[in-house]
Length: 233
Image (cartoon, rainbow, N blue to C red; front, side, top):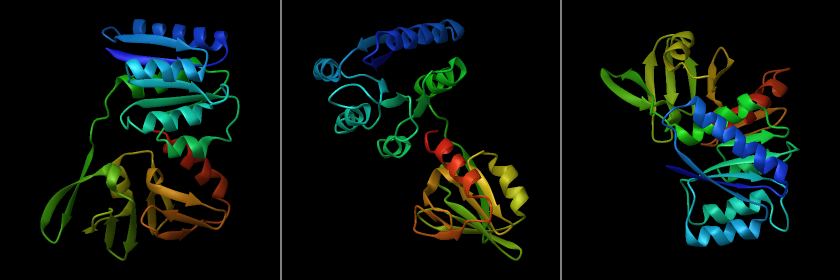
């Protein structure tokens, strides 16, 4: 049983989200969820004192406390809860990223996008690995841990926060082996994991380990859009 809290100052939005969750349950037999709706941030915080929730669907603009403020309060004692933001503006993407939101939906909410967000609440992520052969030793590397891949002649360097793996092969083969949309071919020498990108400007990309790559001419808009998309997966 997944306990879901919805907080929005508009009753129409509360009803819409509740109805969509019930539709999702009907479309996915065996899915169980308890839904609680709140019109104010105070009511939600008061309810949390008695019993916590597994997931939160929060309007960004509620009352004296914003949805982002609520998320910060939730994160003080719960790192595992799934948080989904609803808003009429895209300006809070960065704040949502900082509180590790599972999804960020713009109103009016589309049924398909809402169902995708619910998938992240009800379906536990399956760990995925990529097998590498470095100096005759075969290792399993968690795909989510790969920061980027660089090419030097016939060898490729697969970089994680802990270490780098040197392998032979083509960038195309590696991309096909990883088979994840968040890996982006920046140029013929570099593949980046958009989920491990720290920040981007019109001129350069900085990865989580501080590595910097120049942004190819004319590709800033595409990369920044993909970065926002994959930050909440």
